[in-house]
Amino acid sequence: SSEKPLAGIKTLVTAGPTHEALDPVRYIANHSSGKQGYAIAQTMQQLGADVTLVSGPTQLSPPQGVNVIKITSAEEMLAACQNALPADIAICAAAVADWRIAEQSEQKIKKKNNEEAPTLNFVQNPDILAILSKPGPKRPGLVIGFAAETEQVTENAISKRERKGCDWILANDVSPETGTFGGDENTLFLIDKSGVDQWHKMTKDAAAKKLSKRIADHLTLNV
Ligand code: C5P
Image 1: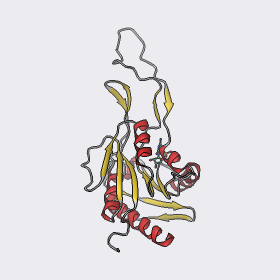
Image 2: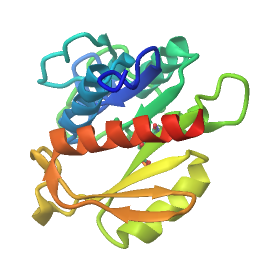
Image 3: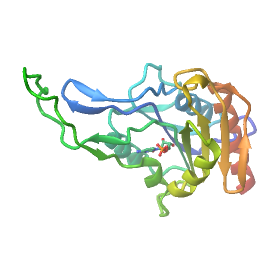
Image 4: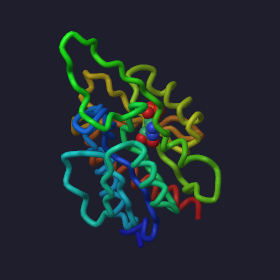
């Protein structure tokens, strides 16, 4: 129906930060609030989609009617995403940590007098968006990523779309002066194979609605 244009459409959304443990009591993380991804999960659900939200640690309450899977690390996020396949649509809004500690300490790393600070070795985390975008029978028909940039926003996002192999990228400027990170508003550019569409500054809820409608239109035009 026109009210539920996404009825029966299986959608996977990632949101929030990941936490990468150093030892049993410490971790590295980033400032992602999860707000944009949670808002997208909610608006997709409101348009009728069957939504699984794979979320890192956030302060947000779970969106109504959404299957929420809470994870902590990037590796756990990847496993949860692969478990959620097949899906028609994947929207990767999570701020996945690029690196994790090469070898987590099983015990709390101790501070000893007169000893140097520890040196931490990192290894790269899996790129979930790039993995979900790989051609193959399990690839969702529409894969959407985000690109948080602090300079040359559209140029960087256009090359990121190609590098990751996803269909659309939503790019935003996260320079501290924009207040996007942790804030309630976002200024986005939607990049697809045909070009760049600049959206007005709007709340993350409004951006989620606009994206969900755009997805519904895209699917209607493609059937
Ligand atoms: O490479 P960068 O982190 O800028 O790419 C951002 C996009 O890639 C986002 O959609 C983010 O959710 C996704 N990503 C991911 N796994 C990573 C790193 C980024 O899914 N390890």
